[in-house]
Image 1 (cartoon, rainbow, N blue to C red):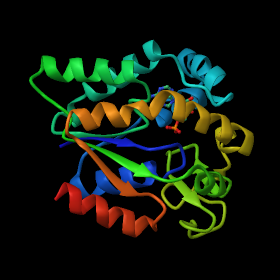
Image 2: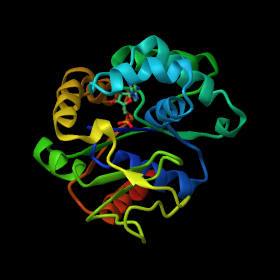
Image 3: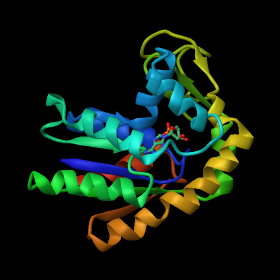
Image 4: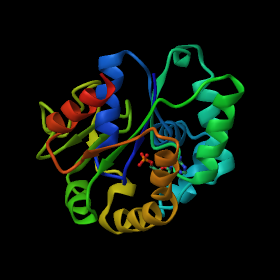
Length: 213
Ligand code: AMP
């Protein structure tokens, strides 16, 4: 099963992607996580991506598409995957479609986790991330067992630079301008499904599993 998670940054698509990955036994592929891992390891790719990420801007398509196609070509992705944060532009979606079509394959579902901007700005300020393993928490909604510490790997949790309020607003503007057109793109392909992202994490996941079967 090949699934794309759509929705504004902070709508909860990363959390849902992880839940889907766990339930269906497919990899959770997040381009944001791949970039952050590269930043942490000080790679050239990471340094290039950071210039854009810190400003709330998108990393150029050329670079992003390359890392995504490399990732989904790996053995663990052969039976499916859930993409989180990719595609974010129409050209990215077209490159992915082309790569899949060449193999007689296609995306099964594009799930839009829908939430209004006000709701998102409020949520993002409470978000905490583990830079070591990519897990995300929320001080109110998904608190870690021990404050400030990752449940999964025991490292310290932080407020990511790109989750800070002024960056969040910029990311929402970028979302509306460059990513939202993907809803119509996948609608036209007949694979778009929408869930209400203002509900609790469990309610959203129940809606998602009802769609996926
Ligand atoms: P995320 O963790 O998905 O919210 O991504 C964090 C940041 O990484 C974004 O604000 C972008 O700067 C960059 N990024 C992640 N995925 C993409 C993508 N598909 N295209 C361009 N930039 C991306």
